[in-house]
Image (cartoon, rainbow, N blue to C red; front, side, top):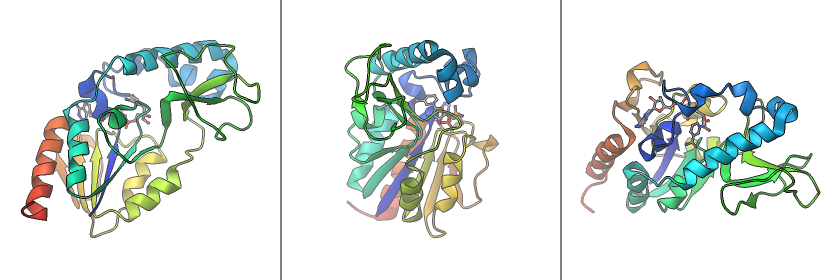
Length: 233
Ligand SMILES: NC(=O)c1ccc[n+]([C@@H]2O[C@H](COP(=O)([O-])OP(=O)(O)OC[C@H]3O[C@@H](n4cnc5c(N)ncnc54)[C@H](O)[C@@H]3O)[C@@H](O)[C@H]2O)c1
């Protein structure tokens, strides 16, 4: 059984990592244009670097939550791929084997020159320093997809979702495109779940099973329903 999990910032909320749009979101104190666009990098790369260095530090100090571990546990039920909009690595640290990052991975850096997707470099610790260079001599920047940049893994993700028997959409406001449009790639006969405490305000097709719960409680319920469906183990 092909199971695809499509996660967003709410997935990591119980790990203490702020979401994007919630009232207390870390990002409430920062304008997107100042820290998460190519223009911001051109204008003040030191400020952008510092912003992501601090995000990386916070992520390193955080741990996967129960929902991340329940997704790992689901590998007993089928072939699980996680497609995440998150730039943190908490799915990997919970043990998930197959994780596709749509918006990059903050634990890696890449060139700020013309060949940005040629190579991703693991970052030792929490900091990319100004003056750290790629092999071609360009300043290293975080491996994250900024607003206005293309999403290299979009087609890979659409293909995976189009083959899913089960799709679990969890902790995303479905407002950041093109990623949010991916849920429509799921086949008609796919069993679809939406897990989000704010689910009543989100727009998904009517065949979704909606669980208005936190990630951990929602995953617990979802896992129970899937175990029932797949019969005795
Ligand atoms: N952890 C991270 O890596 C991180 C954090 C913030 C933002 N981002 C980036 O910002 C973009 C934001 O879009 P988004 O849709 O992922 O986030 P979003 O902030 O727009 O939406 C978060 C969603 O999570 C829900 N939520 C809040 N608490 C929850 C909980 N305990 N359990 C489950 N859901 C909960 C909210 O109701 C909301 O619908 C993403 O593309 C992502 O790359 C990443």
